[in-house]
Image (tube, rainbow, N blue to C red; front, side, top):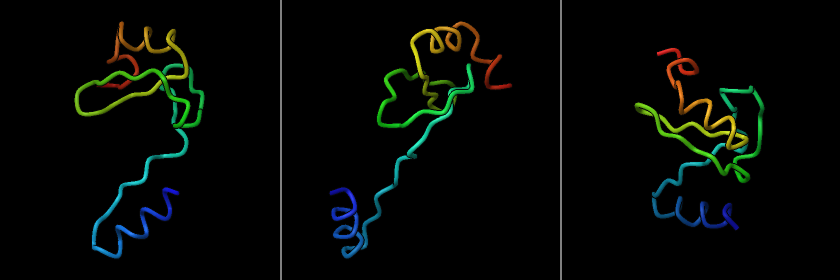
Length: 69
């Protein structure tokens, strides 16, 4: 369905930004589907997604450790 909507919008010169299909948890290194992402933290100019509440909590306690900045 999303493909059909995207093609119709393109006909009118509009662009739909595609969401990534897989995400990467910066805490544990796990890759997971974007559709299942339940845990998110915003830090500086970006959003970070996590496979579990535990990984999100680790990130939130010291984001600089995982972002390098």
